Length: 173
Image (cartoon, rainbow, N blue to C red; front, side, top):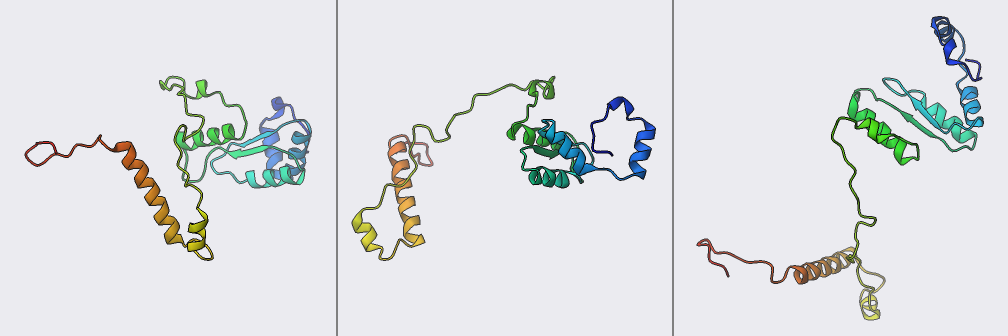
């Protein structure tokens, strides 16, 4: 309420009563926390209503911080909570996933560092003749046709000889 750090031992019924009766200094408290090095703000509530003003205070203070709510209206439960934990994780906060998934037989898997390793999916550059033939530029249809032509040629080269056609009687062609 005062914008200062509080010993949590003092968060008794009287504190919460005063909290309801007096002005809560959310901006001052957020700035104090930012000034003391805090960079993660989690609103634990059934529906986040304070994440926006906290984020606005972070931006106004020209600071870097992650602001996340835990649940959403009509989106309670474990899935929403884990989504919030993932949001924290991708924004640089430390989440102890071993504790989160303890007893669920979860395991780490290796992911590729680049989705298209060892395969090229980009179109080749246009020749001067193709650019000149297109006039002021390629139409969307021409670009689309070039893409599918290149793609089908690549697939055909890759799968040629691997397909076997069978007739209804089961004989191969």
